[in-house]
Amino acid sequence: MLYRCTDADVEFKRSTSRRGKHKRGTAKREAVQAHILSHNPTISHYRREHAPNRLYLPSDLCEKRMHQEFSETCNMKVSYAFYCRVMKDMNISLVKLGHEQCECCVAAIQHRKQSGHQEQLTEQNFSCAVCVAFTQHIRAAGESRSAYREDGEIVSPKTVVLAVDLQKVIQIPRLEGLKSVVFSQRLLAFNETFAPVGKYSQKYPVIACVWDEAISGRSAYDILSCFHQVLLRFKDLDKVTLWLDNCSAQNKNWNFLIHLTLLINSSLVQLKEVVLKYFESGHAFMAADSFHAAVEKGMHHGGLVITTPDFISVVGKAKKNVEVISLYPNDFFQSSITVSQYTLNLCRPRPYIEAIKKVVLKKGSYEFEYSSSLGTTAPINRCNLFSKKQQKLVIDNFDLDKTLKRRKSPCGIDKDRKTTLLNTLRPLLEETKADFWTNLPESK
Ligand SMILES: [Zn+2]
Ligand SMILES: [Zn+2]
Image 1 (cartoon, protein in one colour):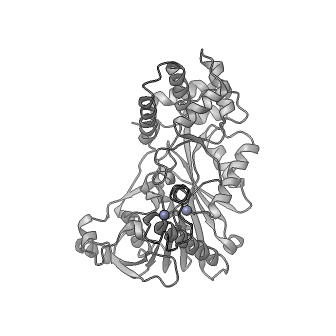
Image 2: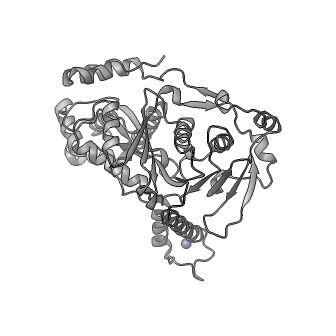
Image 3: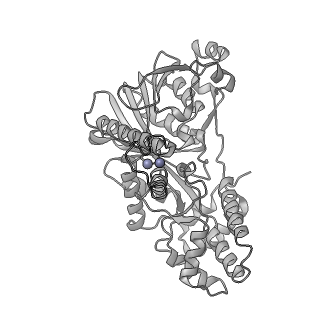
């Protein structure tokens, strides 16, 4: 997880360089910064686009606890207020669930304060680019919201509608119940959730794909591997609709679309149609959120989460009807069939991934349909992502599995990091839990 360190370093340097003038208190500030960074803040995958510099700390930490720990372990006294201020200056937040604010809406409020423009478009502001863009944003948010609600109102036969999201910043072991210990680099765990929308939740379970960073990372292909698993799980249905976060590059790229096209056209699934729908950025309030909140609650109250199997068990019990797919290295793949820029440029009209709000894939077709709005009257375009050579390849007796390069072994974590973790953990753990950490694979 290279980006974690890099992002934190960039942020760290940026905030220190800004403060070159204030010599007094620099040592204290730097000590606090180093302490905060040692808790391993991560960038939230789907906030990159809107708040690229904001870093997040896991939800089992709080400023009080961190300040207390700082006072106990560092030979330095700083006030609680100072500690919090440094954290704020570093642009680091503690994750709060369900209180995500839309950056576009926040920026628009700011804009209206400064310009005196009204929220509604009037003669005064109809030529203001910010106000026009905001009006479109709000309209699109409304459209996606009502399309989402509608999708969950009636259960159609042989169909499922799922909202998909990656739970944010889970680090294990969780600190609840453990005495204050500095964990320099805890293990990241991932939960890609596929939650049935509306009435579908009475018929289908929540599917949670769970793994940790010693097994594989969370690249676009790692996430795609989860989609692959879940579509296999629903292979006997006719139609699967997936509601996705629009900001996450993992959910939205050409290789993702070409793979799903190959999957629906393979003999691995009976599915006739897969539909992808994207929420308006910043307005992705969905079924997966409430499941993630339930998992958080489970971690808070349900005993210690020390290992990945502990986490899996909490996820499995978070709601009544949950099916956990625990992913092994072998479940993760990269595809050898990818989309070339050249093929894309040949498409007429040339599709732009950012503009796509809905995609329809059908068995029997290597084209996909897409539209740039979730409104009912949105025009539909068609696009073929396969080069001539790829088209020949995929038509006759095509075996999708043979084109996938599967992970042969777990990716592991850095040896030194593992040693540090083990040394911190060993005195705290009973043997069975310690075994998990002792056997944690190391990266090569
Ligand atoms: Zn908004
Ligand atoms: Zn304006």
